[in-house]
Length: 161
Image 1 (cartoon, one colour):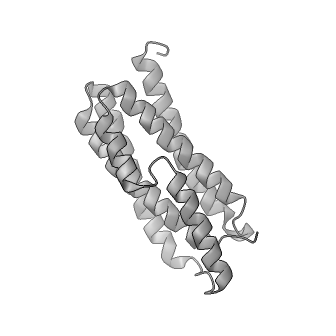
Image 2 (cartoon, rainbow, N blue to C red):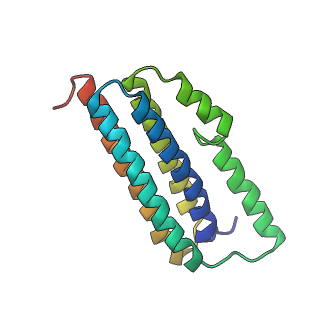
């Protein structure tokens, strides 16, 4: 298999960040504790900031050539995105609606961020060398959110300070 252009990966990142923003906004509204509400609002703001950053970078990225190979890459990328925890819109909306507790919301957020890390790390291996840094930034964002969510869950469960 060849390589993905950074623009293709960042466009997938835009979709993930957009859904992440919507998810964290809704979880903030459903939160039972003030700490969970504040965390979800912070994560929603982060996702919005990430979107702004991506929207600034995207126009500077090189468009992939219009070839049959790009179509195959597009199908591969779309299939990977569909397998993401929030890949299909009806699935992620249904998951959000099923959340009843802060722990459930944190667990779903953890799954979302973990899937995002795995998704982006897989694509990072296929990114053009000159664009790997941008993809690594996306991975870093997701890992930072994952750490915050795990800490919040452990605090709610009384396992951490």
